[in-house]
Length: 109
Image (cartoon, rainbow, N blue to C red; front, side):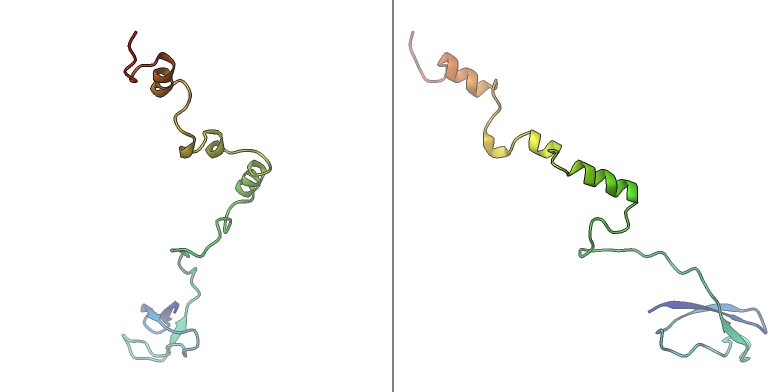
């Protein structure tokens, strides 16, 4: 439900009312009790989207959208170039060195 702003033309009292869109506008001033109230045209509040259910591309600038589309056309991102966790340790780590030298297996020379 929106919040409407009102001003009394008799006493210049300004006030707000939280009303349904279908509700009739306020006509009587709460201060002077005269029927000289008019609804003001306000700029409204900022819209805040919270929670899930919104697309990632909603309300994005055209340049940012174009940059993201350019990056997704057949080019691999940085997440794929590093490999996954299941690939095991990278080459040159201590496990590979132990296999090459035979260390840790209890071999006798």
